[in-house]
Amino acid sequence: MGTVVQLKKRINNSYLELKNSVEDKLVLVEEKIKSKLSSKVDLVGEMTNYHIRTGGKRLRALLTLGSAKLCGYSKGGRDINLAACVELIHAATLMHDDVIDNGEIRRGKKTLNSIWGNQSSILLGDYLLSRCFEMMVEDNSQEVLKLLSSTSAEISQGEILQLQHKGETDMLEETYLKIISAKTASLFAASTKVGSILSNKENKIKEALGFYGKNLGLTFQIADDTLDYNSELKLFGKEIGNDFYEGKITLPIILLYQKADNNEKKELKEIFESKKRSEFEFKKVLTLIKNYNIINDCYVKAEYFINLASNSLSIFKETKEKEILKNLTSFSLERSF
Image (cartoon, rainbow, N blue to C red; front, side, top):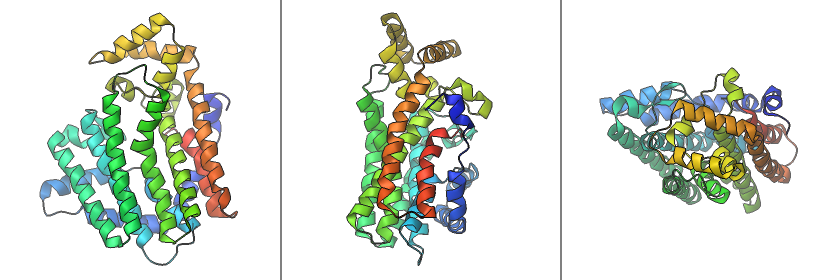
């Protein structure tokens, strides 16, 4: 893959290409989200309006719209409804996530729980999930309902699995992959698979798009976890260290622990088993990560999933939509935001 800096210098416009290719529908998705978040309760309205203003890439919605377009879906607005639905599922999980992690900043702004408290944030997340299930029922597809409801359950299980292994510096890579597969990749897979369900495609098409989404999600999460320890990316305006200070064990720490000597292993255990971690300790871990070339190791791991995602699209004819989704696998690794 080359060095991280070389990776960052490669220009990849696939995210913007995907966004531009479905821009007209994305506008309608935003309107749908706003309408579904409306409430007669003033606090709900205040919190949801704040959430909408914090923005987001809307990547899961874009994957639903892009996959539907790839499969030839053109008539009707089911893709818009379900794109909004997957985004609301994602938003709800983030709200719950921030409460569990005591998160204070997301996307450069204060989290809902840091402003309105944990109780309101949890209940708002539940409200969003309730709205999602309304939308699933309105779609009137048993297949969609089963997929998105089981995905919601899988995300929750991934969160619990992560809590179960919190602070374990000797966590197995296999366990880490199970966590991010459930927490992140499952919703990516559902987002892309929904697009093929809307078009009544055969099972092999549905499975191919689901497999694409899952491996894209794994790549995306590995990149996200790696960015948190990549001091070279300070130039790109990315805050680093959030996972470290929250005590999360992610791929960079797992790979570092594998390579570290016994004294370093002992020190890493002490750092992550303590209730709080200092800036001094973070700098020490960053030095070890640099010395052992861990960032590059993470990108090599991610490249495996990039190839799986890219290859799964070989079942489709060569079209602009396919090219955009294929290029998106590189964006998920190269992104700096």
